[in-house]
Length: 462
Image: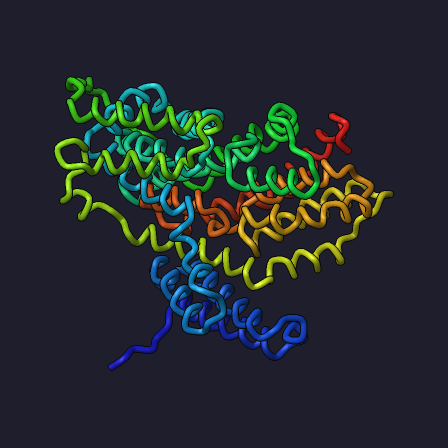
């Protein structure tokens, strides 16, 4: 006999999904969108509810989304399953295999032992050190997913060395420090994240303007990089307090094995190609995939077939592919563009009130990111930049740069594929990342947005 008793999360999901369909088809909104858009909006929002409430596993929510989108015929297969053809998908695939290899060879434990002795003096130094290392890597590696792939296995090994058990505050804090450190502050570094690159491409194509590396760094890094990093460190220590255990026994390092040397050689070559992608123009995803082929090769690689079959987390891949498909459906259905146009109409832009205009533009980018995910922000808002510039009195370049404040402020983890991948690689539930986002986001809007406004005025951008 089927048990229909619902817990609080399940009941919340049922009420929210029912409300979504009722509002979509029986309110004034139904006249603003066609039937396909309404169905797409209901499916998208219902999927987000399932992810937010965690009533079913995340990969199952993604599979349900893709199956429903195809059964309802609201988008072609190349849109719904576009996640499988995206470079992000194969970066994730490569990252999962590299993570297995780093742990399998013992390299993660060795590196963790080296750093832990310097960072385990206090919880603050551990969390701060991981965030700082992640940011520094942002200057070297252009892929936030690639950075997460390298940092997270090492960080998790450091947490284990400090005595943090699975599910403990310390383990969660270490995972969040690595995942957020690799991604959020590095929005202030020009080539370090996908939305940055989308902004550069759309600005150059539509407005014939490309920001220089140094001016972008000066404009964004002091506040959105350094101060936001401090905010992340403080929030993690407050939400997930713990105390590392310093081991009194001397750790005798074993000689470096042949497998470790082999993995280090492969990773050095891979990193070399990643760091020089501006010269050879080969995507980081295909470089990572080539490295994985070598790592899996019998007698040559370091990951055997049994480890691959037992340790490869296919659910993580399906989950992220589904989210990428969800973002593609938002753009294909025209929902993202419609929201962008409405926001531009409603914005209280005025040449006489620069602070109000600045906050309106920044919050518009932030709101658009919640609907269209982070890479969708520049794709949707850049076409309207000239109109916004005329209404606000700001230079076109300043209007475009306000998008960075928006897409670097994450309210829900699903907005950011690198953040989700990081949590999946760490094996930590997504709800902990959501908890941290819910603390950092209001603080960012209330404190960092106004501080950034003063910094921009000091630099003469406003």
